[in-house]
Image (cartoon, rainbow, N blue to C red; front, side, top):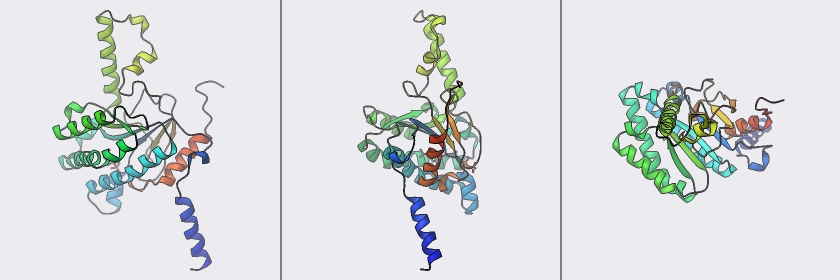
Length: 256
Ligand code: FPP
């Protein structure tokens, strides 16, 4: 190997080594990710869109593992939005199948690693098999105390806020609460993420810069990073770069 090739290979090897937590100035407590770009990745590789989602699911495993290794407390992933039902029957079917496979194949390792799974969203509209497997994953891991892994399936943030409002209104109607007692915590306590910290870092891959109805309330003071990589190409190194960018941000929460 000539010197140039050696340097390139060494550089790539260096770049790819995942960082450890002590290599960051500060790490977020809660990371949320919009895993965007599966469709474009498939198109780029002249593949069916389902293959893009499959490759994206492969990627997910590594990102979850690295999040856990770094000791980050909460990871929220947007897997399927309420708007995703509008995609073709074939694509919705492929995503449902991947969700089923993911929970079936990963549950043992996640449970063994003390990961606690929570599904954000309305499971009611999901096919029965998926509904059962998701409920089972939540139940099996509910006492785990490690990484909190939130997976949004049939999730929409506005619908979540409407649901919270209805629950709080019912408490007021039944005389269990006074309207004046409602505060920010009351609302947080009625979201799917009740009891969890707000999002610190929101990552959306593929260069798109939108929230797309994901965790609107929980993102109030989040820092945003928009890597260009399409989700199936988003590497642990790209993730480390996003975490590093977060570490260098000065968060003032509206103060000086
Ligand atoms: C956005 O890409 C991605 C999705 C709609 C689905 C994300 C789902 C996965 C990565 C896999 C399933 C998740 C689990 C938990 C098993 P897009 O199709 O909108 O991409 P595009 O904008 O390039 O078309």
